[in-house]
Image (cartoon, rainbow, N blue to C red; front, top):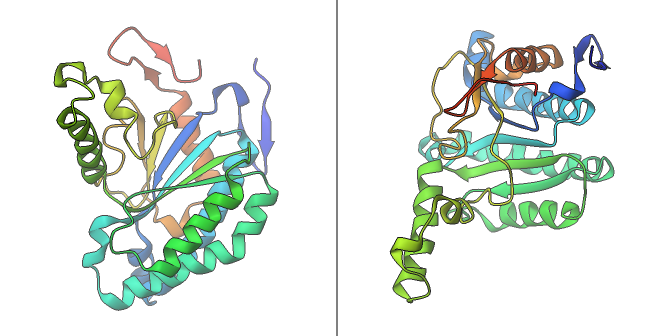
Amino acid sequence: MPDVEKSGDCCVSPRQVPSHVGIIMDGNGRWAKARGLKRYEGHRQGIESVRTAVRYACETGISYLTLFSFSSENWSRPLQEISELMQLLKFFIRRDLARLHRENVCIRVIGTRDGVEDDILKLLDEAQEKTRDNKGLVLTIAFNYGSRDEITRAARRLALLVEKGEIRASQITSEMLENNLDTAGIPDPDLLIRTSGELRLSNFLLWQCAYSELVFLDSYWPDFSREKFAKAISEYQNRERRFGGLRERSGG
């Protein structure tokens, strides 16, 4: 029987913990509406769930955690809500950066910088620079991110190399395209979690999640807890991963 690591009331086997977990953090607005609160309160409570997820990932030995924080499609939301989301992002970085650095977390940010205010970019750059040499959890924040845009940008980089005559089109491989994605150097997610009961990927890590195990939770993101994280990992552990071939248990 494998060793078991205890985290509060949640137990997971270190040998079966997924190396990389991606999370679509959905349902902040609906959480607030169900309680008669403004949407801002849902986003604010969602920040607490981010802290919970990061702590639990560190404690259970997850190597990579990727969070979908702001989609490139989210700019279509009301201006006030966007402003509130940006303020919350600033608050999170300013309040939590020192702690994450002490805990050896390495922060990466993926997505496009287009249309993002300079003060936000400066904070994101500071977070990445300050933690770049840390060897613990790699926390990737997908900010102003859309997977189709990411793939398009990667294809353009390869097309430019062809145009310059540095490579031939026939030499392009899936590995070359993968190495030009925002997530270059990060392994594909073993497990993708989405909260709020929605059953779709919403333009998140489409290339990277080709063989990821998907777990959809009915609860909204502000209610995400250590127990719900453990439940998702437990479901992952009981899956059989085939990768198009023979059976392979998720836990190895």
